[in-house]
Length: 162
Length: 169
Picture (cartoon, each protein chain N blue to C red):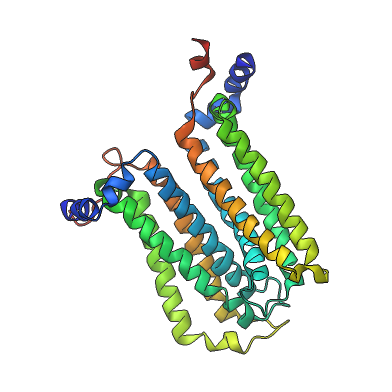
């Protein structure tokens, strides 16, 4: 594993991300903007299911999903860059894996809820509970992401060798 | 200036929270939550104004705005918690000052929009599009909020004293 981290850290892209003036900050900005629109669209769906802005036709919220997916891939792409800059930092931190699991759950739940908007079952109280769960999952994803900057054990593979 | 802000933070107990083990990251998480709520409501309303998902009536989308205001207030409050706890790291920070400029831009744009163009929202039903000069407000709003996020995320890379802006000094 240490060899793998060392190899990743030595790739020219990883070195550039760490040493250039713009590589890391630019990746962070892309990650924040991607997060805002990714989570924003999910919040809109959840709020609407919970009864906010009832005159917004539920079926039409899915029309924001191309924007949601674009933002997801922007966050994924920039997230991979952030990981590549310091592979040992994220990959040795359980918080990182927890965040990935919660993202998968939250995305799956969002897709299930969006599918339901096409059927009558969206108005069940069960859906409202799931919308609340979706809101909480995204809130936890945000918090775990933020905690990554405070819970890492090592920055580089070098520190793992002793 | 810094002393006043710092003593406000200390006397209100904010300083103790921000310097506790998990205080700072938890308040940051709330700040990111508020930002996502703001973009998910105000940002998507702006996109509808620009002609995105035209089938949704604009008045219906406007019902989301109170939640955007809630996100804004949450971030105002959490933002003051950061700002007053280490005021010198923000006051002279070029990225922070740029962020405040974008905030002022978004604020003025909003005031002018509600004063002069808001009636157009009520007249724009499902499938209808706004006139181009009304769409300008939505474009400015989106750009200002994305500018706020961008400059905000860059604050940490422009810390004084290595970086230092002080037009009033």
